[in-house]
Structure formats: C-alpha cells, structure tokens
Length: 568
Image (tube, rainbow, N blue to C red; front, side, top):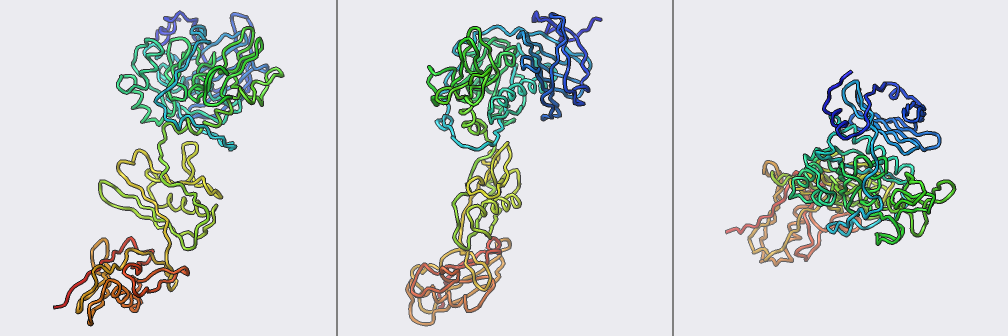
C-alpha cells in the first residue's frame, strides 16, 4: 500500500534502499535472547544473540547483541511503540531502523563510504586550558560518566526524525560498546539533543563555528550545553568522515559512518587526546592507536590493507586472533582514556569544589564553621559542626553528612563528585569536599573555617572578639560588655567594670573586665585566653589576649558589644 510520510520521503530522497517493516518490540522487551534478520540480498536468515537489555534515561530501553563470531552486531533503542536501531553484518553492510509512525518503521541500508579515513581528522584546540592536557595515573577502577550533547543540522535532521532521543540513544549505546569491550573506564550518557537549524558547508567550518559563540551555531550549542551540562558536543552531519578538536569538547561526525565505521568513537577519542599513530606528537608516548599490517587496525589507527578494522581501542592487555592489540610503550589508548576520564567528565562541571576535606588528623576540640551567604539578601546560614572523631579517615565523612543535612541540596553538597552525583565517602582522608553549585555562585558566597572551641564546666565556647585595651580606661570611667540578641537587638545580659581609681593603661583594664564577667558565672559569656587544656583563664597585663567567648550553640544567635563611658 502507498504510505505518505515526510520522513519516509526524506530517506527515499537520499537514494537509499528503504523498506517499510513492522517490529514486535514486545519480543525484545520481554527478554528475547536473539532475533532473526532476513538479509534479502543473500537469501539467508541471520541470528544475532542478545548481550544486554537495560533501561536508559527518558524511559528508553536498549537491546544490544551480536553473533557468535562477533561479526554481526545489533542495537535497538525502544520507547513506547517506537524503535531506533542499527544492524551490521559480516559482509560490512549496515542497516538503520527509524520510526516512521507508531506501527511502521523504515529499514534503511546505509552507504558507509565517503570521507577519507586516513586523512588528518583532528585539530589542536589552542583554547584548551593547560589543565585539560593533564592525565591522572590513578589505579582506581571507578567509572567516569561523561555527558554528550548530540546536535544535528538541516541535512541530518531526518536521521533524528520525530524521536531524536531514540537515535541519540542508539549512537550513544554503540559508543559505550566500544569502550566497554576495550576495558575503558569511561561511560557516556545522552545529555540531550539539539536541532541547530544550520545548513552544512564543510566540516572545518562547522567545527570552528561550534565553539564560536558569536555564530548562530556556536551560540545555540553554548546555550544548550549550559542547560544540559554536557561535557562533549557531537554534531551529526550528512558529510562523510569526521573532524574533532584534540583535547577539546567538540566534534563533527558523519551520520552514516558514526556507528558503522566507529567514527563517533574515533572522533571522541581525539577529544580525549588520542592520536592515530606514533608519528603524531601527543600528550603521552602511548596515546596512539595500533595496527598490524594485513591483520587489523584499532579504532584510532589508520586502516591497514587487507586487515580488519576492529571495534577496540588499543590495549596491550587484549588480543585479536592471538595478537596483542597494543603495546605498553607506544600504543595504549585505553590507558590514556582511563587516566583522563575524569578530566573529560569535568569539561562542564555543575559543581565547584570550594573546600577539600583532607587536612589529616585534627587536634582536640575542633569544629567546622560553614557559612553560606545570600549575597542579594545579605543573609547568612551558618553550620557549626563539632568533630566527634578527629581521625584522618573519620571527620571528613562527619562533616559531609552534617553539611548535606543542614544546607539546601540545590546549593551546597558535600562528599565525592562521581557519576554526576555528590555523595559522602566513608573511611577516606581525601575524597570528600564541600561543593557549591555553579549555577548559584553569583547569588551565594561559601566560606569554610576550622576552629578550636574552649571547654568550661562541660560547655563548649567559641571566641567572638578580643577585649582590646585601646587607649586605656580613664579614672571614673566604665567598660561594659553587652550581650544582645542578633535578631531583635534586645539586651540579654551586660557586665560592667567601673574604674574608681587612677587611669588604667591599655594593659591594665581588660583583665579587670574579664574578672567581672567570669565572677558572674554567666551562661552567656566568658572572658580570657584558652589554654591547651581547653579551659579559659584570665591574662593579667595584656591588651589583646583576653577574648570574649559565647556558648558554641548560641554564637550565631548572640552578639557582644563593648562600650566605654566616662562618669562626670
């Protein structure tokens, strides 16, 4: 029957082989362990076995599989009644599945040629900060989650159709597959999709304009990146081949070659800082692809005549047909990926590390004063966290839990930033930090201070200010310490020393006022200097060492003022 659909006309207009098919998506969702693909050209039915079935974001479920000999692969992204998919056969033919309606799908045989795979397909991004060239030789096996924004042009829009998130999921699943099978510790999430409404010219211009915020393409990408907090941006193009900024965050990738030729994984490899081979100057000597003449070439390597292009990054720990697919000294792309995975995952951080909790074992009687100031309202929210266990691996977790329980989660979090989330880590002396949301940094100021409290009569005390001797206290004058409520200004208690004798110099009278304060045994105020034991003792003959102390649990509610008056 005749079926009219704009998307279908788009595919047919590209001179591509198109068939209308129906897909029983329930067979896949109910855990089918394999599916049969009828290849009309070879008049044979091909079986592909499931390797994974998992749920991604946006309620998308992904079925992924391969044949026993690994020469045939398939991936299906499923949402409601729509399916996006990719199938590659052992004869190197490739097929895409695109939803046309709720019931019908287009099976499209795609042309994977076009674009010289051996051309120089990356540009050094000179705007990259030096820190993004670093690599962290850590032994941790933690997975880094990297958010990818998939953008498209007027020419490639038909690939994304009316369900752009499905096609992006298929692309992203294939990208992850390349990393999983290579033993990479980088994983990728779809941050979002973007219709750029841009008409293609050439890859160099597209790539240049992607990061230029003064162009319509660059401005749109910058805004969408901010919304989605994407670490990498891929522009899917109808042009052949690919082009990327090495150690940057932008790339242009051919739609037809993104999966079939592993061009998506290849160009993002350049974003990590990888090269094709040893002759190219790179971050490290081993940041290269690998090939063995006549046998195979890895994802980053240029192709070898008569050899197989394998879906692996170079890794000397892995083999293909008995041969290692890398060398320790010169061809270990996976090593560099693993070393730089958190750097790439932090291309667009949504949290800023304001205070690492990593100062080792703490002295006795410590507390952390964490102050969040609302700049516009000139208001403060203050947490005083008393440390119960000063051990190097204990107190950072204590502080992290207290911060998360006290402050608004959308503004401040404490713990380790991992997989896009911040969570306290038990038993670590360096992995916990206090973070401020970057989206809030213009509205809030965060300050963290570690202080020592005094201990008197079982009460914890915090110093507020010194009793400064100033110019001395004349005869027949009074010095008064006044404790007030911060919120109401009401006087809570006051302490007065009257100098009834001769003039007292700046070293003479502060201890006198301190005696008046301490003799009253007030629950609101103490005066003196904290000793090593934690006790508070008055210091005679000092114009600055006697401090005023408020109860730690009341210091944010009270204020102390000093007033000197002369009696006539």
